[in-house]
Amino acid sequence: MSIPGMKQNIGQLLEKSTARFGDKIAIHFIEESLSLTYKELNRQINRYANTLREKGIRQGDHVAVMLPNCPDYPFTWLALAKLGAVTVPLNTSYQAQDMEYVLNNSDACALVIHIDYLPVFHEIAEKTPAINIIFTSGEQPTEQGEPLSKLVEKASDDFTLPTVAVGDIMNIQYTSGTTGFPKGCLLTHEYWLIFGMSAAKHMTMTESDVFLGVAPFYYIDAQWELLMCISAGGTMVVGKKYSASGFMNWVREYKITVAFATMAAWTFKQPESPLDKQHQLKIMMVGQFPAQLQRAFEERFNVPLRAGYGMTESGPATSIPFEDSHMTGSGSVGKLDELREARIVDEIGKDVPQGEIGELLLKGPGMMKGYYKKPEATAETLVGGWLHTGDLFQVDENGYFYIVGRKKEMIKRSGENVSAIEVENLLKSHPKIANAAVIAVPDENRFEEVKAYIVPLENETSQTIPPGQIIEFCKGKIAEFKIPRYIEYQKSFKLTSVGKVIKGELSADKESLIDNCYDRMASQGK
Image (cartoon, rainbow, N blue to C red; front, side, top):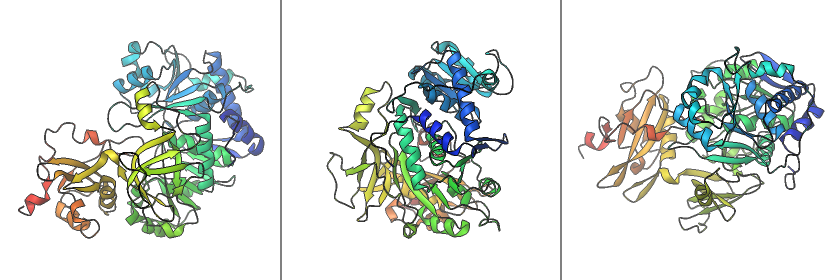
């Protein structure tokens, strides 16, 4: 990647790829049965850009977008990029309070919204007076007029790119936020170019490949996935949402060769099928994946599974190289991206010796510029050019990075540090557990204790996976002090857009975190 000194912006990248790959299929929408070549995609984006500009959107304007995974989303996002406007993605699960906060905090002047979400907007419309232009998505006209997809039919497909610098803001991307209101990350054209090109390299994406994207477009995954495909000249197949039971069916049906599966462990928990190995996948990448399941996953589906690490603030950071099959089951999230520098530091900012645990700091081109209108949070996160990730890591003698946990989620039990992530990954490797979340519980004698929330697989219950069985499953796999003392069962978890458990919801309605749950010590008479 020849990134340093990069001059092109996202609009120019699209024009360049259109010139190279014009008649190839660029994108296919599964539910709409709609395919567009690179030429057709570029022309459609030009129509959207012209329509948005005709209705008053100007370079630098902040435009909120609240859409499901439908054609309007990538068309609008790339059209705004061509205009030099700024996209503010809205999570489609936002309720009135969340929407009001983000619309006002982001200084959005316009809104592109699916008709299904209009009732939520109507609740707070009077509280968001800066929104003076509204476009709708859907089949039917509304009080706002014809849907955007109809308006663009009258627009020209010729568009002259304005001058947009690579360092100009393209997104104000609000973090998922497991507690409190999210912060808006300022992400530039350079951020997205680097993310797309880096992902294409690490996922070995070429113009011959077909990628399956099922992440929501309002989150960064689907956005960098699209730019990865455009950078490489490949095809992106878009589904409305991830389905554990349907994922591999889509892989087979659409001849998918490359995939990124945030929730691959859920796919693994589906019943085995004689068709499991009948596909054309050459690589599947994940964020984190229980190390205990990785080799079994690769053998069952006959595909290399490679882990990586990145965050909204940093873009790409680490990944396991395609050829490093010897790292299967290691738990590593890979080696450092060539455009990143890293440090692992202690609580006073001093570099720790190799192999020891500390906070990961990152530096390099194309990371976020800061948090929008949050100077204090920006100053805490970006210090001396280094991004403080808030994640605890260690690196081995061969340069492989291992995530230990979040600084704020380490459990301090009798002077020992317990990584919530480590315990969660072990619990999620249990064949009858769909999901698990681990938190700290205050304790008079040990300062904190370990509590696990368990979501059983469908057709499983607390009777078919009793607490004692879970405790026995943990023994010998992790240290005794890490084994949960408390276990509570849940039907489901409230999740962020990328499948992270919103842990604040687990204790929101409980005065005591140890009421009405299994206590290992009590059962042992201690």
